[in-house]
Length: 190
Image (cartoon, rainbow, N blue to C red; front, side, top):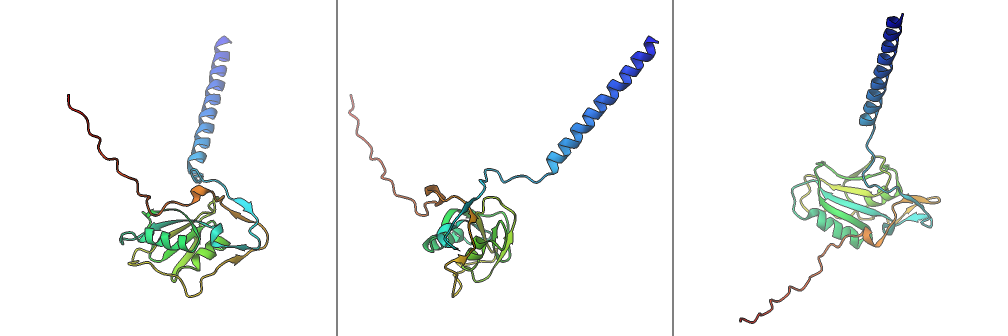
């Protein structure tokens, strides 16, 4: 009798451990396959922009998808002159045939505003939570594309819009500030 009880307890313990391992495997698989949240992305803030989104409300990252040197920097300078906030510029590992403007949704007002500044560009949405707009310059771009004849100065909206919080750190410095080189000091020989 004792032997039967031990075997029953062993079988129950074995099935309990097997269930625990199965549950752990299922949970682990779900965690590995779910979409990764944007690292460090701060969700946007509902902002009352007074009925229209303007360049001063938009934060942009500019990346160069091609081989032309300084194209992202020149585009960033040009967009800053249009009063956009340029967070970052640099090279992209993504290669695109057409300049691409990426935001939370291709219909978002900030995406449509940035899109209006490029002659040939397409909009894409990727569901990002921060509403920062990425501009990936085309692989075949040789020079600064330049703006359309009539870019939008604003995009009309009804009510508050979800936009990233703009701080003094929202803009990068595009021209380095010169710092004086320290002059060597003479030391007395003993």
